[in-house]
Length: 296
Image 1 (cartoon, rainbow, N blue to C red):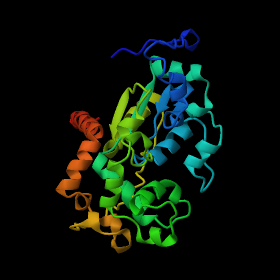
Image 2 (spheres, one colour):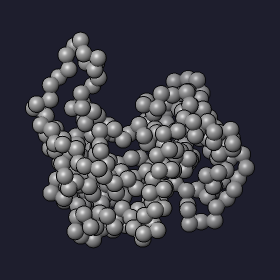
Image 3 (cartoon, rainbow, N blue to C red):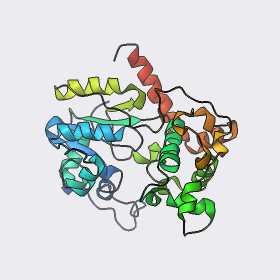
């Protein structure tokens, strides 16, 4: 496909009040609204990366930040670094004209990483609702789900110790507008707007991403590591009925297989709700399979 023609933002007319699209938010707003506002841009390398939660974004943010000249101090968190400092790397830090030129200009590598939606959802649940359910400030992330399940606003430490089951978590999601969900379990397809990607990768094939990135920037790139909530190197445990077991009763949650959380009824409901993600991931899998046959 050809690169999109570059547009001069000064020449873009505002829609008239009686025009059908008058009530649509202009692109200017969308570029500075999460998650697009968190996209990273390295101008001199012609590189754009859109991070998606649960898709190796911590490691990839560090890689792109380093390419942009931002180096972390020991024990410094990359998310805090980018979101609380004007590093000049995120869309939120940049003039609109710079962003528009990068989105349409030739020679740019604009990439995103996609994950199996079932694996991503189980991983988010295990991380946020099981392993870290008692951590300070976790309520900011999981609070809406707890309140929906328990039917009350005020939550107690006992609520977090008990936790909610995976089935209860999924039931909460099925009753929510996907646009309102936390980014960790919001459909990936809801987060892809406004960037015409030149490269889309499977999170299980980051070696292909690294190979492309090395060629694009002309320097060595370390292979990003997945920040996973389940231990993929350990012996996996198949646990029937895992979806109905409360977090306080789940033993070795990091070793429980994804399929253990997905009986047929839940699998079908998740597949329907995340239909676009399922479709998108299958397409990425096919592209990766074809490329792997060519050794990247």
